[in-house]
Length: 408
Ligand code: ATP
Ligand code: MG
Image (tube, rainbow, N blue to C red; front, top):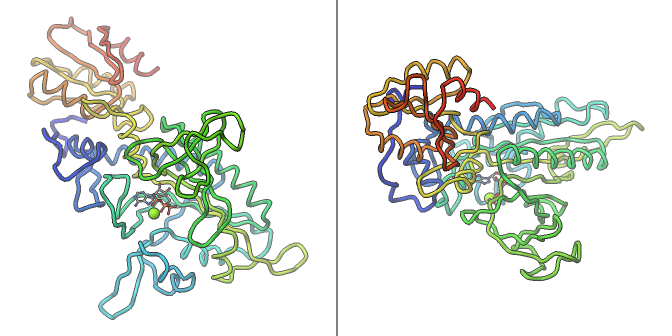
């Protein structure tokens, strides 16, 4: 894409009403634009990043047998009365039609998926089933001051699974937990799984996936020798204590952001909606249900919090909006390089604007694309300068060699 044609422009100054690094950098560089607290437009660069995160999550959910669907965001009140969520969930947005009918906006969708699955489950042969969606959620959050980390409108992947037995649920739960670690690793993040107390309706085992960052809103304790990790909110343990799990390591405390979680929902929702199946003995049973969330838009914010420096964003290759930022400087015509990169199947943002070299370099650093390629009259014909956004050294080389280096 030619930067002269890009819908957005770089802003010189950080917005005054944003306190966090992710919101400041993403707004300045034109990835997002705030409509009001916790509600953002995703602009061409930002939507590319969001789509790439979404695609990684989609691939790993497909790999564990999840089937993608899309459920409604506006729900009838009755479904939320059935589960008690209408009165119990403080973040639930409620609205009224002009004929005084009442609705809720999806903040999570057990109330839709449970009656939906009932249509297709009759006997044990119809189980297990796992469906997921990647869709916008709405929550009446009180504190939306962390940019993309806490939206009032935000993108979530929510998967739900249904099983004939507790054992089968536990097998699947472990499989999804593994897939989650894979997703976060593919995104360039290290996640720790805290053992949490469970959702509003259950005391069953669940895990929260935490990425260490000062911009997060959770405090966790973790062992430096084993995988033990808990949320401070619920923990009996204290910082500096010896780990009770392995007896070797010491517990450290840190701020973190919850990027996903997996919950054992037991039979709460299937009982509410009277979902049953006939087991092998011909007896009516309720299935066992699990839910699995990932904060897609929160992840975009967390990635910026983890990967930036004083000049701007440093996108990991896996989610970058483009692979190469091509700069034509001092009047150089970089059209030929642009064409060659595109022919090689490389995604390029081509800064073809009439702007000073210094200005282009500074803006490229702010936008944070992994490779910067410069074409300038100072370099010989067919020669370019190549630099990693996260590396110090720029190298001069022939265009074919540069393309090979990027492809690797
Ligand atoms: P939190 O404790 O941060 O409010 P939660 O326990 O309410 O999270 P869930 O209801 O389990 O979260 O939602 C699943 C995932 O959606 C979370 O792990 C998180 O990554 C993401 N998420 C939750 N609330 C928000 C929000 N307001 N903005 C952005 N992402 C969110
Ligand atoms: Mg919450």
